[in-house]
Length: 89
Image (cartoon, rainbow, N blue to C red; front, side):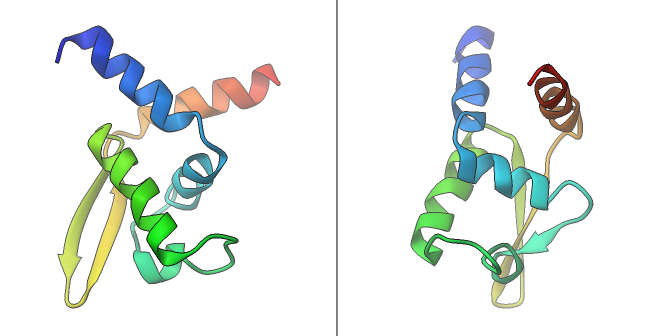
């Protein structure tokens, strides 16, 4: 996969409201799936699909701790991109 394809994959991953919400929930600290699934309007399986897309785009990292998978932001620069977009709108 060349660099342009990687860029497109990141933009596509960011282009969904649920995935954007997930990233914002992770902006301050790592969270387990159980924490990400609180106060949301989507199912656990739907959450897992969105987390996979973010992980495949290299936006998120995951690590297994006990019976839970914990997610964190791979590179905090993604938050700068989101902030710029927020300022534009």
